[in-house]
Image (cartoon, rainbow, N blue to C red; front, side):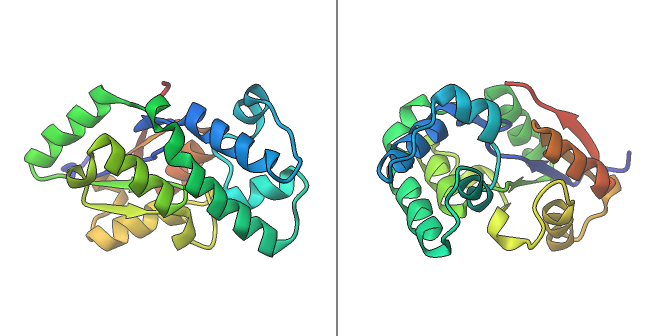
Length: 186
């Protein structure tokens, strides 16, 4: 591996365990329109799926309603932040690598508001160099587009990059990017 210049972190499930907060916010949002899902159902089938795709999977197809429900989920999400847990060993390692000159970016399919709100809550704002959210690329993971965009913005090659991921689609995107990658299990 060439000199490590860029560290790319998936957010939900890798840098932070947001499973319970996401589940609770989605369950409450969907209940408002008469759709019931359990926490277990959300965690086993839907966690990590882009909001738009998730809404379609539970039977909501109207684009206006999907946007409204997405905004409502973002609004409710902070209510559940006390259940969010930081992956401290990974975060501390990233801090050490940043002090040695590496850049640290978050690359997530998540909505930018969800990411920045959690980061603010955990006081992580100053520990990263950039964020690529799912809204910035046309093709979601397993396409490598988001990882490649972060590399392009930093002017580095896949050989100078390491990616941390938790999901199968994220790991496939990392593999397709050509960078070294590590599977994280929280």
